[in-house]
Amino acid sequence: MNAINTKVLPTKRKQVALFSSDANFKRDVATRLDALAIYDVRISETGDFLKGPPADTRPGIVILDLGNGELLGRPGIVEVRALWATVPLIAVSDELSSEQTRVLVRMNASDWLHKPLDGKELLNAVTFHDTGNQGTKSRIITFISASGGAGATTLALSAAEFLSSKSKERAASTCLVDLDFQSANCGAYLNQFNQFDLGGIIGQPERLDVELMDVIKLSRPSGLTLYSFERPQLPFEPQGSDFVFRLLDLVAYRFDDIIIDLPNIETPWHNSVLSTSDEIFIVFELNVASLRQGKRLYKKIRELRGSAVSITLVANKHKRKWFGNHFSRSELEKIFKAPHIKSVALDNALLTDALNRAILPAEVDGRARFNKDLKRMFKERLDDAAAK
Image (cartoon, rainbow, N blue to C red; front, top):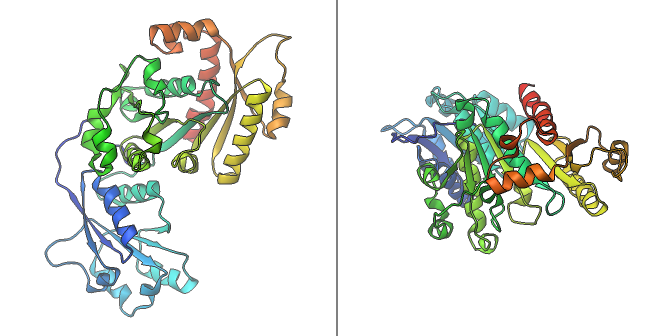
């Protein structure tokens, strides 16, 4: 997806023509695009597409909800499409027959999305085909602990800083989202607390747009953007999930790399985050309880995603000595039935010092074994993966 400048400038809204007879679909698409504060969505019924483009204006993008594809059998639809000239057409539908697909190809559709619609894919398609912009797909990197205290938050913070430290431009396009609303530990670890009262926004999530996102963000000296809020009741609020999904939509639009600290608890957005992540790090400790939870989580994600996502298994707090580790690397690979399990050294003194000083472990001692392990892992899993 496109990453726009972190400084939001006033802009004339670009017009998107949305043709649909599905009330829920119309509301969902209009809500998502309106939140970006740069699109003006004009809504019409599906059949109105056959009337051709309006005489008074020419939209920059057309989104056509074809439903079951019945409209593709109407005479003259290919000729009507030609009246829109080079305006990108994003078609959305259920499964289509081979004949319907051929008609869609003859209509020179720019893109096709399957219903039910994935919000991330919608934003990606719109921004990719938006004239004058270079489409760049955002990358979502999720860290999740197999058990409490396994260390996913520390690793998520370290990964975000690893990416943002490469350049000012990279920092401006990197964002860390803390979805632990119980304690907001990403902010707490760095002694940064969000003072913004979210009550009014959560009750009216449509108020959240790119301009307000600048108001509620926290920032690191490197330029990294952090969204971290302590609001324990949010998962139980009627529109709490709407707020979270809208927040994730907006960061996916604005940033190239999004790091998510995802608690291992069932929330309305838990599976959605796992389903749309490009890289997932499962962090576990070397004890039976954490390994059991880690194996269960790994199996769940594989059932959810198959081989469509890269999963890195991280054995955290690893003791580097001949005696004391109850599980060897080969035993871990047998437990998870997965190769290339990474390990990160245990360094209580380093982590305690970092917490007490509200800085990252790499800022305490970049040469410590813990930081060397992380740098090696991030280079392989994040840098090398992005280059492929």
